[in-house]
Length: 356
Ligand code: PMP
Image (tube, rainbow, N blue to C red; front, side, top):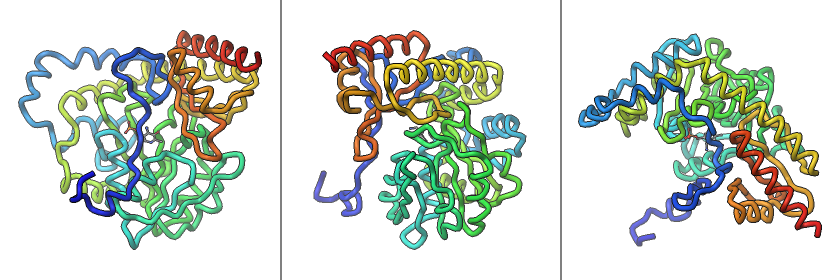
């Protein structure tokens, strides 16, 4: 780093994304991408004509995509905010509602970006430990006295909180924004979107990266009371009003419209998850109950790191986080059935060698 960097930035630990190898080809089960391609309509809408229009700026109102999202969830476009990946929605939320005098309450084990944004925007986080079994101690988030941010289902644990528990947190914090990050909710969680009309402090954040197969298009969104959306628009329009590029907007509209394709992909992933979880348990793995497109699993006879490294040597990438409570575990994204068969075959090899 240079001598010019602000001290606050010099002290920050930036987010470390999962490996994205661009050279060797791996079976990639490390960043929770969808193994299936985007909806067929997406392929048709990215035409030569659409590409030629890239000479023009994109639509700063993002109106067509806001409309498509609002329609899908029975909301008004005024309830919808659209961002360059949901990371940007999270970042704008921290900027809108938290600072040195306005802290944020977060779980200790959750999406790593919450702590990074807290550091970046000089917000002091109030960090609440998950219980021993990795469930969220709901009572500690009730009446938190600050903005609250948590993922439901949580990552990397995969554990979902029932909607009634989410509602307790939202209802008990009327003076603060409660942000529920639903990046993985389409794989078996209960969404808090239905609560939006009743709670002006609730913001639900979603992404096209997982269940809509568009991680590379970078589209996220947030839904909530129009006043909250207004706050977020103030931040966006003070930073990057053209945050959604033309091709991503076209792709997003098509992906949001095709409910049948979306449901079919989610169903296939949940069935593959079930089958993979059963096979890994039969091999002696312990794991949490996943409501997501990944498994949080600990192998028998070797550490999380050893298992991760040995899988990588055999061409399969999973995510290892480390740290005292997470070190026995890896996070395994649910890929196609064929990819999971390779994972299982390599795992059997590794366990056989570990025992020999
Ligand atoms: N929230 C959670 C819980 C995540 O795991 C991720 C993906 N890393 C994101 C948000 C951000 O996803 P994206 O920026 O691709 O929408």
